[in-house]
Length: 171
Image 1 (cartoon, rainbow, N blue to C red):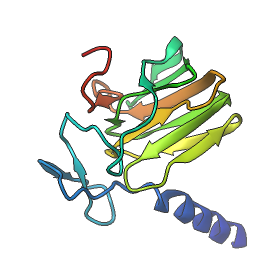
Image 2 (image 1 turned 30 degrees about the vertical axis):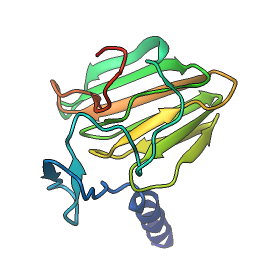
Image 3 (image 1 turned 45 degrees about the vertical axis):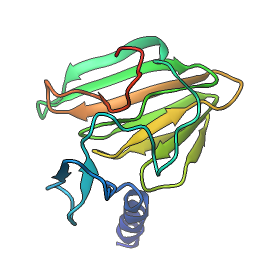
């Protein structure tokens, strides 16, 4: 019983900081119906800041990407895990994940920029949660390349990522 209470407390702390952010300039805004409270998030595709500041680093896709797992799970969801390298001095464009995800850092250090939160550093051997429908970017501000594993579990035929910042190399 005590273990259940402790685990419930840890889960509350772990996810309390991962709620979708409220944006005063959300245009248009969408309500996250699955949240316990009503939250909104910006759905614009021309976002250039997180927490009213530009994200440092050169925009560049992950390099050396290899898919480790790509399947449909027992619940009919698309489960995808991939490994890639975030080169030193680079970052992903500001983006959202409709259903969230997880990143584990194998080598190097990643700085995660999330709307509504202070930037957080994640060194090798740690993982971080990417909350759904929240503006974010991940940057390697160090001098060593960072090897990452990304995992997503979501309905089939939904995008894993939605780039919201103009100038992404695929634009």
